[in-house]
Image 1 (cartoon, rainbow, N blue to C red):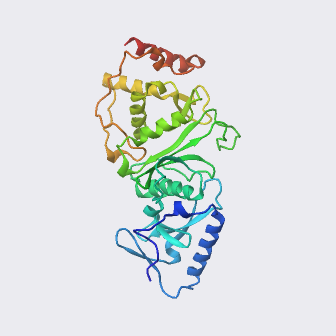
Image 2 (spheres, rainbow, N blue to C red):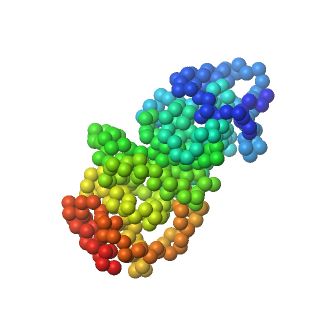
Length: 342
């Protein structure tokens, strides 16, 4: 007997119909798993994958996945690919199996653009995008050295919906929230922590759109952070964003928790400028930009050479906060002054 999911066409998707009852859905999944384990099925169920392959529903093909980093007791039941047991291909929700693509869809036409994650269904979408899609399906494991853990249960995040599907997300560590390092320290500024755009939606300006939304959301903050380390792909997105939005150049900093002045905070525009200057001096190689070399946000630029900066810009666009506080800051001020005089 073929399972009711995995669907190709449906009137409603999980994000549209799930209630905020995580415990109830987990209890139902555990009961279903026990039924399979005890062989209570009268006939074998199979699920058809998008590849056409059929997977028999057996406990050896099932696993419970932790949804939240800080609440490991909350789990969902997943079906793994028999050829790759670390890759989840379907999830059991509301007494049905749903393919990964169906979990990322919506039938609600008002769900469009960047929307704050609030409901349990949206938390599931965020988990699937982050852990399953980026973590396994769209990540080149032999090349990439970055991966995202599940988000905390109350992490501030937004999902970007486009044409009835979730295609991207970003998450934020709020100012005053705990750094999670066991020291009790708190973030000193809002920090963009994780960001991802699906492969098929890259090079469409979605990465820069999320950066713009992040900056607009915290207009009252003089400084905003981007979590360190920043991937090369993300740096290309930041470069393009700061070229088109010069007013944000003094606000964005690469930070390590908690984001204190000094060695925990480096101005991103300054790093971009220094990289451009090294390129012009011929001391570094510029990595070519293409869709294939991006496994974090899709870059909006595909230039192969250094950008010629507009040296006629106002001096305030080169400001980098409070450079006099540290030796690095004095060097920062010196370089910025050189940039003004070019």
